[in-house]
Image (cartoon, rainbow, N blue to C red; front, side, top):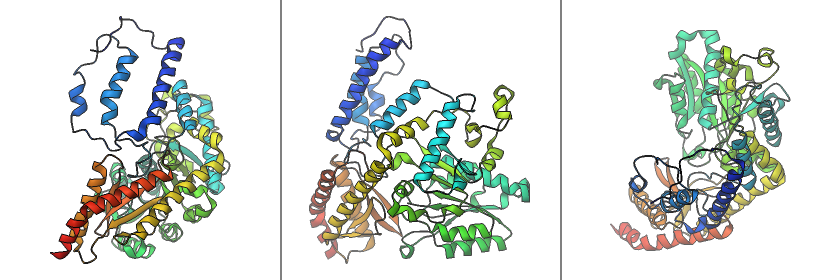
Length: 498
């Protein structure tokens, strides 16, 4: 039974906070130190946690000892450990001491910075940090506060797409009228993030007008600008109005890179808004050798990337830059009497409430500020290059084993591969054995990977990038994969002989 304390409340006594926070930091540091020992993928069954916790909140306060005891016995076993060095699934959610300290400060101040006046430092630090990161990416000044644009920290890529889509929609209404909503068409590829369709529906785009243009092995699953043009021209001929295209730098399935330079030619010709979703791949572009992946962005309307995926900043952090902030403000601005103030009405300040869906916002720029200051550009570049080297190492392992094949060229720190013990196996049989291999590997709890399907082919994904991952973890993962392949090989040979 949990230890209960007398009924009293002093929610923020500085000395009690000091003592309990020290204990919590020790608990967190111990978790980070031990995270490698936990099963990466949680082994619990649905409903496990609910069966262990009471149905009602406690009437009397409970001690921190009791709470942490439940974290150890109930919460941690039910976690899939994204910080494990053997987490190679999805894309990584990176962390760092600097970002954690920034999050502590963010929580400490509890600022609700919807307007400049509500917290001038929160607004202006975000402006500074967004320009810093823009310079690291060598973005043109048209995307910076130092120029004619600007940036904002959103929660997710979905929100970045939504707000830019709404801005594009309202811009179109100025010329064609709101009654033409059902004529508006938006474009992505079949590799564009699934959130794109969701955000388009939220913005009022008719589901029949959301184009998902097919990709293929021929283009390494990048969006063909030739096919894009054909689809747009067909829509125009049908009396529809092309509105918005989302180009991706580092798609979720395979990290394909859409040809921004060619796509923007089409977008500009038809007066479309072109957004570059560089949630994953964009961070790599702080390294000069990868910057060319953003070529053409200078002619785009907006760009977003997620530092929580690769720049050590913890969830959630999505940076959005726009060339014409006024487009966002016109579409999203609210001005109730209780928020009116002289600086805002002078139009000499930024009110970030008009750059996002919600009104309230946290002081998230502190996280990114501490990351950039604590590690510097050189170390962040080194971190990305290290992940690239480890992914290249794994890619070499795959290429050296004739039972495996690389499915698409590796561009970043994701390796897409398949187990093909028998080249004569029918596609369905090959997919089945890869499913079995993935299930076998993940069931051990020693590694966690995920899969995708591209071009009708079932593919295993190995994404390097967890903050604590070292070369030895990549080697161990490959050895485990080979062990799983060996255990399935007899079955695979039987499949070949059928």
